[in-house]
Amino acid sequence: MSPTPVTETSGDDSDQKTSPENTIQLKIEIPETEPLETLRDVWNGVVNPPVCSIKSENADDKSGSFDKDNTFSISESITNSVGAENGDSDLVPENGNGGGVKTTSLLKHSPSLGMGILEDFLEVPIGGSGKNDGLENGSATSMMDEAWSQLAKAFIAYRGQPVGTIAAIDTKESDKKESDTKESDTKQSDTKESVKEILNYNQVFVRDFFPSALACLMKTNPDSDVVKNFLLKTLHLQGWEKRIDNFTLGEGVMPASFKVFHDPVRQKEVLQADFGGSAIGRVAPVDSGFWWIILLRSYTKRTHDYSLSELPEVQRGIRLILNLCLSDGFDTFPTLLCADGCSMIDRRMGIYGYPIEIQALFFFALRCAKQLLKPEHVDNKEFLKRIDKRITALSYHIQNYYWLDFTQLNNIYRYKTEEYSHTAVNKFNVIPESIPEWLFEFMPLRGGYFIGNVSPARMDFRWFLLGNCIAILSCLATPAQATAVMDLIEERWEALIGEMPLKIVYPALEGHEWNTVTGCDPKNTRWSYHNGGSWPVLLWLLTAASIKTGRPQIAKRAIELVEQRLEKDGWPEYYDGISGRYVGKQARKFQTWSITGYLVAKLMIENPSNLLLVSLEEDKKISKPKLTRSTSWTC
Image 1 (cartoon, rainbow, N blue to C red):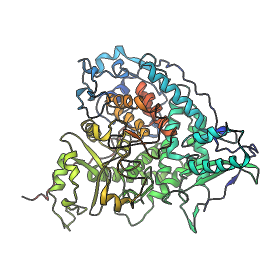
Image 2 (image 1 turned 120 degrees about the vertical axis):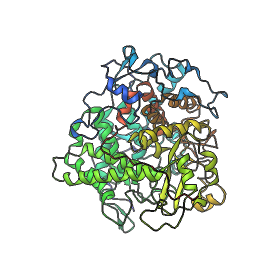
Image 3 (image 1 turned 90 degrees about the vertical axis):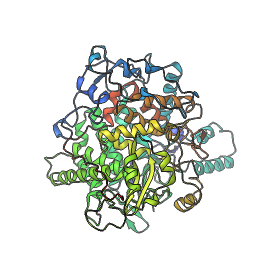
């Protein structure tokens, strides 16, 4: 049951706002990079260990939450992605496409890129041009220009102001408007077919808009108005009464998406939000509120518009979102219990329980909220204390129980079971025989990752890229763990990156396991869509994590793979196949977040200072757990 649309000002009586002819054609300027001042401390944060130290030592101090100076300098070596002074910069994949090539020391931080070459720094401001500035070839520049052009077509207006980007440009609908000589009944038939075809891809999704917002903010002259409009409009939708059938959702739930259309009866523009009632799984989006808080922090960081985050309604909106997660209940863990289909993987894929993606986003949102909430506000004092306690407990739990590397895998392999005491090491009573066979071959001696899920007697050992990258950006991962995650990507490049970045999950479910876990989902067949498909949008996350760990060459290598095909293939939503070779069987073309994922990756790799918009520095106050050797080993 859809919520009652709000009544807004009159729009154009003859136009449907969700059709491409009514999307906003914004002029995307691609300005040149402008030099600003050099900051030595940020150079240490981006290039030198520790991994999770970006700019300030006092991580969550309110006064230092948003640095007024948003600039720092980068070495010419990093800008051009040269590995070091040792001549490692000419690494070329043996097969020409990057797949299956054993990586070399080029992909690691080089100690030769130290403070001794500060005199040769290139001074670069936050933001980016999209131009190559002599650093990239003409083909890459042309692809950037095309990406900006396609992004401009995706903006949609409400009350004459851009409020977001639709999920995908419907090319069938665009072609239809050129065929104005058809008979009336034929037009009606085509319209119905188009509506059926686009499904909900003509809506503004909160999670989909996030990379679009970053692209707008990372420009040298940021388009911040559309981001501000989006934040305020979704906050307004949060205040709706949210009912599905006869059940009312929590007050703080954010919409999964919303659409703008012209009501022919009321002759006005109206909004309609979806809080999960129209989704495939009929599940509320747990991640939407977290993305909203993180984007609010990115907006404030870039624009210095503190007035937005300090509005009473915005402060209240943050509290409502997190109050859903911090409320007392029956939980014995600090992690969030979730249903299948509550995040980017919005279909049945066995992520029910405590999925790493949601836990990492939760942690990220908690730390952002700690910066955004005003401590002097009477309603925030106790709330901030609850946030502090949850951050400490959550970081310990994830770092201790979700982390898997070769040593920990060997520990689990030798676990005892049925340990009833509070001193038990195998606290979740995981049966060693439940370890899947593929994992023993997949796990390298060098590297590690956060597994997909941990709950009683169950460990989901699958690799989920989004959760691991968010863990790095939010500093949920320790510096050593962040480095190990990048080591794993390097060691298992062919499996996790392949011919088209990046695998959303590895490995794919197949056979009887696919039968039982997905319910025979025909869209999530093996190595397709959410079941091991390759998603170009994830490129921005890999790029951000690579820069933060001081290994930008990993991102550059992935970007080069994307540039070989993504534009030629029509910016598809996802790719199929074990190596991501084929355009997805049901993939939409001109998918907005495939376009913006590439744009944001390029803007960050050309100007690593943009990382500051999506990365937090390490909070020294959070205690780090020590992962001790298991005492339950058998002799």
